[in-house]
Amino acid sequence: MANPIPDKTRYTYVYHPSRQHKERWEKLAAKAHTSLSKFIISTVDGVVDEREELAPRHVRELEGLKNENKALREDLHRKDILIERYETELKRYRAAPWTEIDFKGIRPLSEDLVSVLKTRGSVDRAQLLEALGIDRRETDLIKALTAQLETLKGFGMLRVEGELLRWEA
Image 1 (tube, one colour):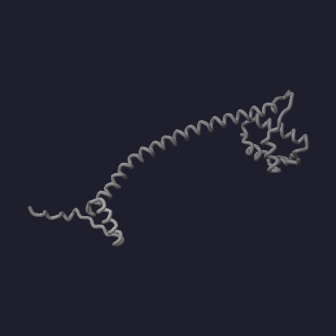
Image 2: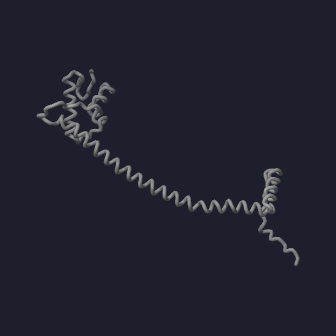
Image 3: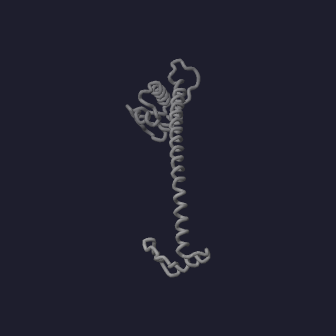
């Protein structure tokens, strides 16, 4: 039987960057006891198969990470709401002695209030409410704040000029 004529549509030509590069590949093929053509095909197929195998794994991993990220965001959102509620309750608790008419005992000043007044030197009431995180609709907190400001004014630590509050101490 005669040698069949090779199918030219199956040929691929590789142009190596240098002669040394081609010689290196030929040595590697010889070490593997195969022709250069078979060596190139097996090496390229190995890389392609590995990448095709990794792709679905990466997709699954990405989906898992997306789901985990979503769950963590929801958890963080719930915790943010809880913290906000606790902070609101703490503000009300600390303001309670300042809103009672017949209070007896010691009423601590808000550290945040004193800190804002000291660092800014002078501030208007709207800026003060914003700095302390008090909503204008929270009338109890505003009453407590006003009582504390009056106390500071009475001790000469604060001067009130219209809407402007100046720290004097």
